[in-house]
Amino acid sequence: MAQTTAPTKTILRALAGETLATPPIWMMRQAGRYLPEYKATRAEAGDFLSLCYNPDLATEVTLQPIRRFGFDAAILFADILLVPQALGADLWFVTGEGPRLSTVTTQADFDQLKPVDDIHETLNPIYQTVRNLAGALPPETTLIGFAGAPWTVATYMIAGQGTKDQGPAHQLRINDNPLFESLLNLITKATIEYMSAQIEAGAEVMKIFDSWAGSLSGEAFQKYALEPAREITQELKKRHPGIPIIGFPREAGDQYIGFHKATGVDCVALDNSVSAEWAAANVQVDGCVQGNLASRHMVTGGQDLIDETRSIVKAFSKGPHIFNLGHGITPDANPDNVQLMIDTVRDAG
Ligand code: CP3
Image (cartoon, rainbow, N blue to C red):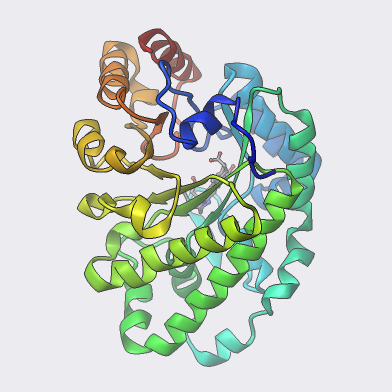
């Protein structure tokens, strides 16, 4: 639900602009393969997509890292590629490789996609997971919902898989710009409806994942990263006054500067390509930031983890900050290192 009175949960306080003595903490991909209990539930579900669409099991895996670590936020267990699937794309996951989708590269492909109003038919189980979680989480834990940003989702829909340089999406952007823009526009509209339904089901914060924003620059960054994030943010805030939004234009580099102002997001999530000192001076000056410990510390641990965690907490200590990794935790991470990170953040504050 949208926050209309002064928030009490720590993450909502940081998102409202408060500087807290101890930053609240959660972790991207906190429900995932580094946890034995996740692997057990995933095996019970069969495959990853069956897990996403099973509200009981998706609720269970979302709660697992909250039970184990007491994070300040839970993030809905789902995937950014459910939106293309709801729009009619075929989607499957190849073990050890990643997602595969039917491609959209021609007008005929685009014309076969479903209208935005039809997405809920596929996505209803996700809203049920959100409702379950809203009733099941401890009162101090914030529930974060999410979707992929239109550009990032489009890169998968156009290429039919993850790509190193987003080449196929850039090709369509350049060679058939009207089709590219139609696709981006459709994803933007679907994303607004999807996020809006998550908020109605009880999600308290929305995060927009633009994992491939870093491959856009100049005017293309303005049009295809900033503008869709602005449109989604403005529409969600119009429909749900006060709903806090986190933007994550990953690897945006110096294009992180001004992102709060250009889009209206309440918080900008930072990856590891920018230093905390630089981001404090250039991004946190405009509002809350989230990040940005390198995920590898969850594998390597030790004094290096402690030193780096302390230095990030210190660098962001003069403004609103939510502690997180710079990207998702990896399957080879050691859960003991997650606990060490949390203890270090809570001691350092
Ligand atoms: O953060 C969370 O814990 C919430 C759930 C979540 C998942 N994916 C679960 C997941 C979120 C927020 C995502 C976002 C997502 N999905 C992004 C954007 C963030 C990022 O990582 O850059 C992207 C690009 C995707 C698409 C996707 N999903 C890929 C490329 C892969 C394969 C790579 C991999 O890590 O296996 C996935 C699968 C996926 N999504 C898993 C999880 C837990 C692993 C699935 C499994 O259990 O095998």
